[in-house]
Image (cartoon, rainbow, N blue to C red; front, top):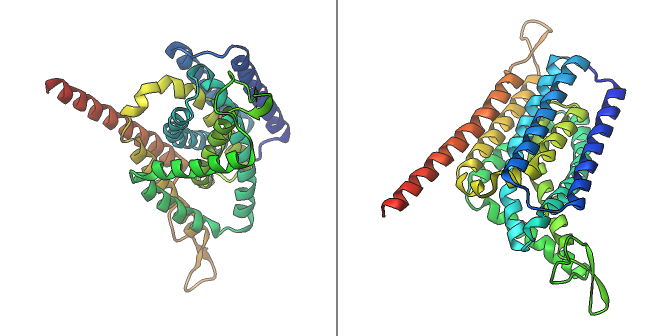
Length: 329
């Protein structure tokens, strides 16, 4: 069922206002959020996503609502993997903790703009080149294998280092921060602060992850509005999740395996979808049959939630065992 244009415009306007209001709150009062504050914000954005799914149920239909929920759950799960790299970026550039909220928020906004462009490009490719699902599926399976390898994040960090070096060659950047400012004066000369590189690094890093996640969500739905809003809701709560998890990220040692399993599963789903659409004619008749099964979004949603739950629980159990073993020594 087609979603009314008026609803799409209204929803995007409302969500943009919420993002702007969130950014203004951070700019007005930069601080280190407490666990309680972060929990409330995460709960707010999760509740907002569930309410949005409910509205889609009445505006559209149950399939539209399920498509959004599945896409949002997948993007949220895959986005959690971003947090590990975000921690590396904050540490690498020694970003003062009270200004990390602003850095994350601006980085997320940059990421949303880049993702919107990427969604348009992928959407056009899907619409005009249906066999591209084979390519997307094979790419996601390859990415799943790469994600499971321990050096994956090291490779990402090397890519970020190259980007940073290129930025420094083109733009004069000071060695010290000047609060949350982007511009400062050093020896009478106007320069950019390291905060600019942090913004660029966060945005580009997220785009690198989107190269995996955007093709994956097109395995759930090809509706650009659902694809973008699922990404939007996944990223909106990412900043608060960063502060909520905090040191817990170090304990989630198996989380990348859960992410890898999700990517591999969606990759196989895309390949099966392409095979399903590529119908074969009956030998005796002129009719065609879909010769490959399709995986429903209910199954996909269950796999996504189960994968992240198993990876998280296994990580916490392993962390507790290591802690007990260390105390016995």
